[in-house]
Image 1: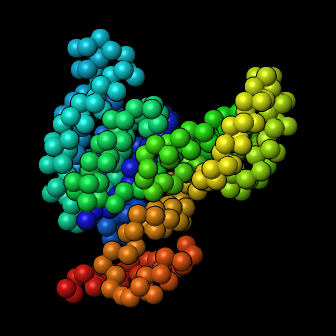
Image 2: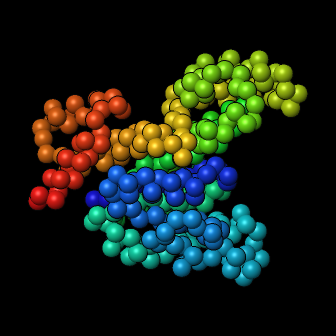
Image 3: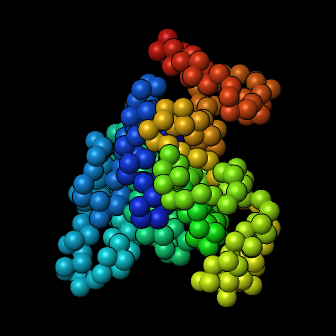
Length: 294
């Protein structure tokens, strides 16, 4: 059994920076990390890459050979990866026993709510390699400053959650830069909790670009609230406490905190119901010591 994160989000949301910072943090707390680049357009990697899709296929080659644009080329690359999933499995197997995976995916959002190739790749990895993965969906925090863009981000987050079918955590990235884009209409908790979206309607009506879509926006907000699935964590990748809090949520969602814990159902239940401020690092250290003793 292996554990890891599927890192997704629109272009510019900070996926590669996240994978770099997250891998450094996880190594600091004692985990072996394998970062897997599955973005064939990402040819400048700041992190040490354990597996790179460019060893299988390159976007530039696809665009040149098949006369495709970047979007069509990415779809082609993911289709090719799905058909050659055995290649990826063979590359991942040496890391399964003792590494934690970070999968850095492309930023083309259609891959995660419209096309089935990326979902099929993830599903096959989960089934064949017995992986426990959490989708970490990054959304640039500056979208909160524009009510229309924020509602669009909510719709994207919801459709991605429903399409992928993985444990899912939405993250407002670059939260340290949010004040550079202007003042928020409400406090940050409003945008994190995603409740009472009707309060956004007034601000949407003030924008001539959004006011003519008032009825559509209201219906979209109703759909989001009816599902009740979307909320956000915040992240400053440079802040150790911010990253640590996110890691706790991710580890709880994919079951990493239960790995190698010996105990009764009652003890497991206590951990599952515990708040995020439980003594996580002490427990992690105990688990590591237990593994070494064995």
